[in-house]
Each structure stands twice: as structure tokens, then as C-alpha cells.
Length: 183
Image (cartoon, rainbow, N blue to C red; front, top):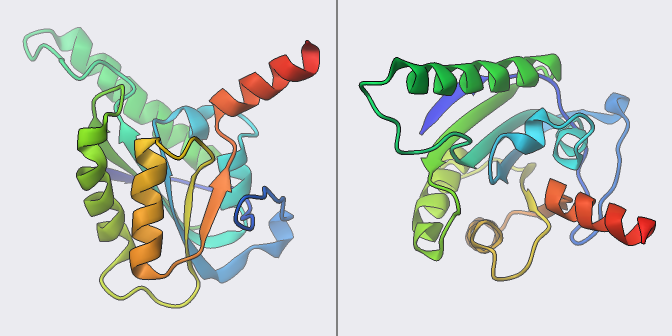
């Protein structure tokens, strides 16, 4: 799992509800451990994930999957260049958020994220949360179907640690909602 520092993000919601908290409402004592399938949620301007992160003084975001093909040919420098460019793009996007204490971590699972990876997700999230989390720690996961591996892993971790679990609307849900309104 790789990590790199980032920047400013968005606001928490109660279970099952999305809420927007003004940037001025950021609580320096609260920490969030968030998970996203890939970097798209951080790169997408105005994403719910970004808005929700803004209300936390400290934020760790776990990007579960690679945004580039996992089977990178070591002999092909262009493949490594694309991966490095993606890392740089994520780093720049995170820095542009201007969050005072945001760190982005990459787990590097292959897309699509399968059921056999729940243990890896649980382990990575647990590592970010810590053995005995301080008061004010939240989990943040995409709002998705109950059988989604990321949702299941985050629910499991939140339950084991007794942490509040917040949800954000991911890009897939935003696209579907937009289609529903148009049609």
C-alpha cells in the first residue's frame, strides 16, 4: 500500500443520508478514514467524497484499485510513465483540495474489485484506523449495494471498531441519478 500527502476535502453525513457541511465547520478533532474504488472520486470536481472530507480536520483516503492496468510490462517505460503520471495527477488533485491534513493511500487491487479481496480491504482500513482509535474517528464509504465488496469491508471495520459509518454518493450513482432526472 502506497501513500502520498494530499490537500483539502469535504463533509460528513449521518448514516444513509448525505449532508453538506460548510468548510468553516471543519472540526480539527475529527478524523475520517475513507475508501474509494479508485482515484476518480478525488479527481472529479465537486464529488461527494471531496465535499464530505472537508468537515474533518484529518483524513486518510484509501484508493482500493489501480486506475491503470495492473499488468504493467516492466520492460516498457511508457507503462511506468503512465502509472507515475497517474500518481502525480492524484497528488496534484489532492493538493488542490487544500485540506490541511489529507493523506491518500493506494492499495493497488486489480479492477474489478472481487469478493476475494475483502480481507485485504479490511486489513488496509484497520491499519489506517489504528489499534485503538481515538474518539472522533469516522469511516466513510461509497453508498452502494449491500453486496459490494468495498461496502461490506467498510461496514465490517466500522462494526468491529465501533465507529460511525458515513456514506458518499459515488460517480456511478450520480450518473444514474442524472439519467433518472433527464428521462
